[in-house]
Amino acid sequence: MMSNKIDVIIIGGGPSGLSAGVELKRAGVARVVVLEREPQAGGIPRHCGHPPFGMREFKWIYTGPQYARKLVKTAVEAGVEIRTLTSVVEALPGGKLLVTSDNGVEKISAQRVIYATGVRETPRSARIISGSRPLGVLNTGALQSMVYLKHRRPFKRPVIVGTELVSFSAIQTCRHMGIRPVAMIEQAARVTARWPVGLFPMLMRVPLHLNTRLVSIKGDKRVEAVEVENASRERRVIECDGVLLTGQFTPEATLARCGHLEIDAPSVGGSIRGSGGPVVDQYGRCSDPAYFAAGNLLRPVETAGWSWNEGRQVGRWVADDLAGDLAGDPLVTGENIHITIADPIIKFAMPQKISLPYKPERGMKHVQLRFTDSVKGTLVAEDGQGKVMWQCSLNTHRERRVLVPVAGLVSERSGGEIVFRVV
Image (cartoon, rainbow, N blue to C red; front, top):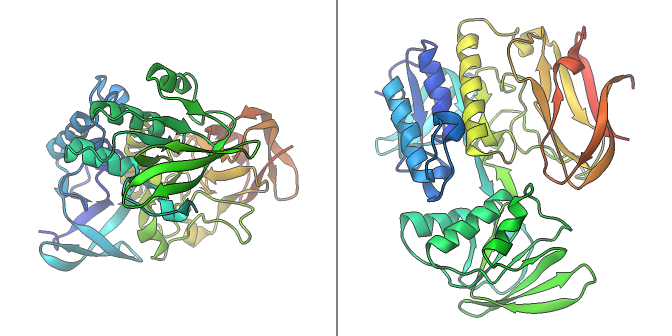
């Protein structure tokens, strides 16, 4: 079955991958196959036993597992083939893949491939946290898997590290299993998630400590306490039996990084950080035009609803591409506008290029920016000669989404560069 002709292969069966598959089928693409390495498709929501999911997509409120099942059911009914327990181990130029499954190792190919592999949380090993390595240190994904899928309680009184949206989701997961967090700590001076989410710990009687960083984890066989430090460098010990490391997402781009695609990675010296995902144009098209990308692989991190919508759009553009109705192949024409950032406070810009000729009725309508800290000033977009193409007042906080209209950057341009900076 897998060796027969496939029009589009989608790597990843989460919200963006499944919605892309549905849109491709609705556009008349004959054979669409989703490859999912887990036993069941549905993505991260499958592990989230709480609402709200599905309001944008289905105009209904679901729990995560209900939402995941709805996504799968919709895809299957549309004619999408879903292959679970199937992993892609190598992606080669031109849409050729090496995959492993219960059938062994296979080489398959398609006219187009969509990366929809999502994100993962940064583990302890990458956070540079000192101390011992006892049991009881988890990230949110592992907690949700243990609670909702395995019905196990890994700890009773953890400290939650981070204040992203997923951090507050973790409080709900803890409540479901009768776990009572003793504290939530955040290194920054304000909560990362948007107001009024920051009020949730108070409502749940979880003490919130801002300007507080985790210094070390203490314990022999299990976590017994953590040492934290405030902005005045005063240290204290919080007794607990677990540590929950939340957020600090990074794109699950291992497959793309190990392949031939161009990656939006940090520059030498780390002054410009990059998204960590593939470099794409306004259609989600990668440096190899046989490959596209959608969802949180493009940047960490958006909601399931946002990823679903983005997957749907990329699916439509891939269908257009198969019909020969997108902008010319940038590898052939060489015509595109490169988008770069020239200020270390800007974390990334996505998409990283605009393929020409620009078609305002198609493609992403905005360039998305994120910032490494709170910033107030003027956001400026210049061409390669320093001419201001677009500007606006800016007052935003760390990890907040800022959208810049693509139409304001392109005008009558025929290639070149757009550089973002804050002044």
